[in-house]
Image 1 (tube, one colour):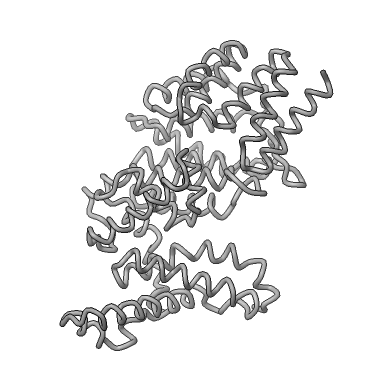
Image 2 (cartoon, one colour; image 1 turned 60 degrees about the vertical axis):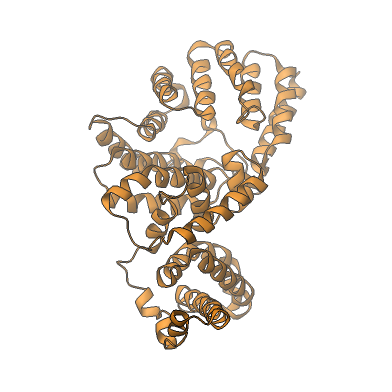
Length: 419
């Protein structure tokens, strides 16, 4: 590939390869922190060289080779400094044993990204810490993006990720698929990670683009891998179904200039019917098995939306009932927000506004732009244009997503003009 051809694809390719390369290097050297530093250096070198020189024929092996050399250099430096007998023995290993061969790293049966995912969700880490680390290492999200997903300050998240790396190093976690007991303990964290990665990809929290297809596609790919590993787990199937049923609408979510198109205005002929059929089949099978979890309920809600031929045909009473069940099992302010929206669709905007009041005292969402935007929408439905316009403007100022901001400003402007 020529340098001219390489430039537009480098960023996407590097993001796709990063977790695979990190997994390969961690598997070989066992030091997560050192491996991540080395992979970051390799990615930086690639980002400067590939746009000018072209993407190598085997970019994954190229990155592994560069990262492995960095780790080797670090090992040799450490060996030289400490002068320990065991370290000296490692220092004298032949170069071909220190650096993995491209052919060996390409073995298709090895799913390094999935192994890395489970390693980052090790029992020695807290739930929040393991999720943050995995978002950083597997999904490649920035610290700021992860902090936004957790609704915490960026500095807090940076400290959390740093501590996680140190804990992984101290624990001596091996880079291998955990046994059945450990796997079950880590599974809920793994699913939560994939859920957050997908959400960030489907509806980017910041930036010029409404979505980041690379992230949502990676989340779906990993969810499929976990589903293959655990085909009878209802929540695994539910999460995969939720992703498919949501991602099926992606083509209709934005206009020709990248502008946001809300669900009630979307051209449903653009929805991916094959993804919807797969998602409906997955969640139907999962729900028939008895125990019902949060991901299955969210997938069921998405299925009700997707199966309506028109927005007016949506079965809102069923959605409200499902959100009621979900709210009962989850202390999640976003669930409460969506429950209020469904209640407004069934019982009127006044009821929705009433249900929003408790969220004003919840620090996790009180200042979130979506709470303000939903309140604006409900006041708009009540005919209070001036109040709704003011709230739309406030919501626009609070979001970091450019498409969302533009949409909210547009809503405010139209209301002001019509008033």
